[in-house]
Image 1 (cartoon, one colour):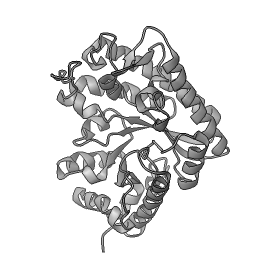
Image 2: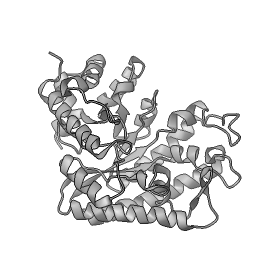
Image 3: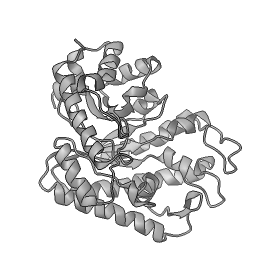
Image 4: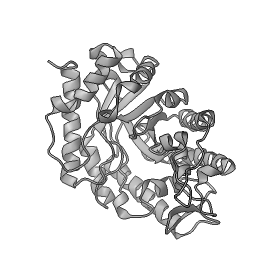
Length: 341
């Protein structure tokens, strides 16, 4: 791979974050393949309910670590039940639809799953407390996820042998884990922050497993104050961020990451049904960031993939397509006009 293309995607790339409106997998896969011909992703359809949501979907990949739905949310279970069967069914249907719509596709393809720390902050132990409160349970979860992800990658590669798989690990709950902001079961307190070294070790093991299996690890977090340095040190080859929420506080960490060869997936297109701005205005947060970190503007199109600010499940189908169209135009502007005139 040349220095001009040091990532799996071509310069001027654009893609989606993951989720999509509606409940029909074939329709979603057709839309994604049509709108994102050079960097499509496996659509997620949380509108179908429990099991199609981010936590249930990742739970479907776990090996010998069953979870189930309780009134308070997902909880560790004694044995697999109908909730897990439903989640695995949704995932299989989505993969079948993508395989049908992407038959013969060759190029980069992105799949997504909730990361271990977001899972640990969301799933409850059988006693009701969040899993993140029990370090032994977290260890078991991480080991299960590594094993399950390996099998998932092999399945996707078997269905689409010409694809280069990017694995996006979604960690919106990571900042809360690091700052001790995860609520206790009662809701009146907060669980103790997890040591950053432990967080980094567990993520490094997961990203290394992705790399060993021939995948390209991507870390996604659309929260404020994303620990960019930690994600880079953990082995993420690209980091997905909401560009509209970035501040100067993160410039040094982002600059260090780019200098180390880490790619950026930067969200600029709104996920709500609002009037869309012109592409030149939409991509301004990317151009401003690139200017602040001080790299050659002409190289932004090599290292940056333009995306919506987050998933599109809450948008109307019409807006979802328009948002991806805006990403396409914004990526073109970044390529042709890397600096604001």
